[in-house]
Image (cartoon, rainbow, N blue to C red; front, side):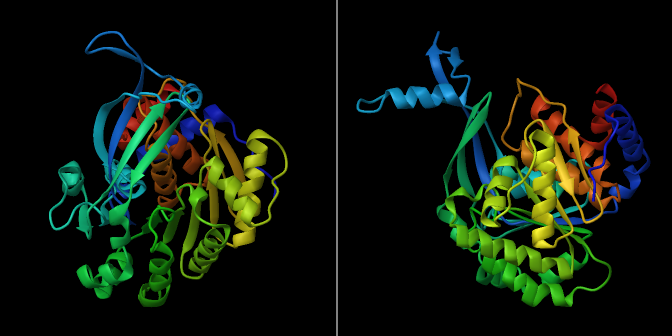
Length: 375
């Protein structure tokens, strides 16, 4: 299998045209996502304060690391300024982006229990939600070249199969999944019982689902803190979904390197070609439908028939970066579920992410079309 080459301008135009013609279809593509939920505090770190209300932020993660490193053996004061408090978690951000496209969404996760947390109330109006536990909390320290996610995860143990069975029920879960054209389970890393939940879905839910294959999307969410054996077992579980679903594994650049390492894969080439090769080899090793990898400036994906990369509309001065990958995933999965080919699905993904980081919100289909037309 060779790597498909694309004409960037032609691809952008064709993708915009495809979105125009499929707007009504998108409204008839129900999806379901889970299982996390966080309250995100978007934070800047003060470098120099110039007045009680004004300050210069530390611009880069590298500069922040130096500030902390210089304090070794001494001490230092770090002032954090909250810029926004918003819904968070890979699942809610991705589901919110899909809902912005007018895709009918159901969300199962941790949005507050027994009452929905205020930060998720607007989200709950746009999607059908089943909230089973209190959300986690994240302080997202954002810099121009990256971010540090400081999480408080005490409630995440409540997302387990026993809680799902008790508060939602297996028959209802079967019905929810059966009515969907697209299903996503994300944030495996932070949900300690996710592997067990996936096993139960394979055992209790998947065999009861009828009809044509749905797309089933997985996002590991930075498995750095999990052991190599944990990651291998999770990847083996994901492979088992391919029998009943078209399985998609989404990875950022760092995650693709971690997955390649535990699978004994050594991608060849440099830059985009290396990323495409990683996607091809991971997909072949796992024997699943699609692997997609999204570094900051481009994205690549591979199926059994095709492999391609697409450059993104990169900006060096984003308004927000937390959630950019989840918005990419939303756009890519929308394209795949809508019947777009691999290149157009990638183009929807990078454009959705590009719009999000520039505007600090997920686009509607019309906004995405206009954004594509400016590229």
